[in-house]
Structure formats: structure tokens, C-alpha cells
Length: 208
Image: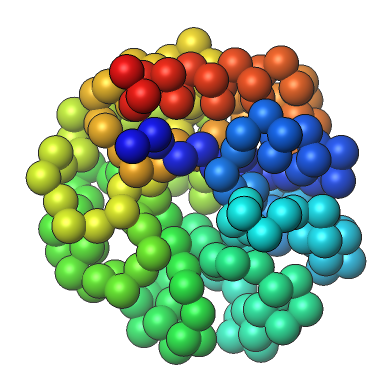
């Protein structure tokens, strides 16, 4: 089975259309105002309308308040939420809505404990640890830290690009790979050739 590919940080309808045509399985919209890839509610709704039913729409949130999460669910109508901040398991689970839990790979992160806490998540996304940023750093972590035997959907992020994604898929055997800056010409502006190369290189390994 081919690894799935998520292109995150989509800020324009045209990039959403190109990513889907190139074979992306999921698109991520960042609704976190401190991100260089931030989209507001109206922009998110507009991009959402350009995402086909066979492509997952994921809205990334960072420490959002409960009412805003409910508003996103009601108005953007994503397929999945991605909690990328310091949200507790109770917070993520209270909405009775499918979600991805992002985990930043601190040295002391207990993956087994996190998997138990977020047992009902759609997937666990592993990203590089940076004390000053909630993702989008372009930094990599040691893929060997990820468990080869697991009972959860593993999403690999953190510094991926067209040149290293094949190696990443070989090393970690993720269910999905997630890229943002690695396929951009500038922050929030996707590069068509990089997106196509990333998707092709990721899927070529898992199809082999």
C-alpha cells in the first residue's frame, strides 16, 4: 500500500488544485495566526470548497479556544482537525470529531504513553522539537526514534523535502508523510514541481 502524502500550509486555491492534481491525499490549512502560512476563516472556507471529496481537508490549530474549534468545525467543515500545540487529550477528544495529534520530538517524549493518551486519534504526527515554534521549522529529527511496531496511524513530518522523503519512507515506514516548507518557493506559496517530485518520490518507495 502506497504511503499517503499531506501537503500542509496551503494558502491559495490554485495551490490546492495543483496539489490534488499531482496526487496529494490530504491538504492542510493552518489557522494559527503566528504562522507564516496562516489563513483566516474566510480564506479557509474558500480553499475548502476547492478540495475534492477524495482528498482529506485538515485544519491545523495551535492552542485554540474551544469556541473557535467549534466554529472551524461548523464553518470550514474539515475532515480532520490537527492539534499542534499543548492541547490535552481531554481537550482534543471533547469535540467528538476526528483529529490528528501532533507530537514534537522532545528528548524525553514517551511515545507509548502519548499513543495511549490519544488512543482514539486518527493518527499521531511526529514533528521536530523546537522550543520556540509549533512546527513549520524545516528541522528534521532522528527517524530511528519512531517505533517500527505500533498500533496507531503514524504521520511523519519535520524537514521533509523531495530529496529526503524516499529515505524517510524507507526508514520510518509511515502511513503518511507531511510536508510544508519543503515544497515551497516562499512561505505559503507552493512550488508545483517540488510538490510533484515530493509526491512521486514518496509513493515510488512504498509502491516498490
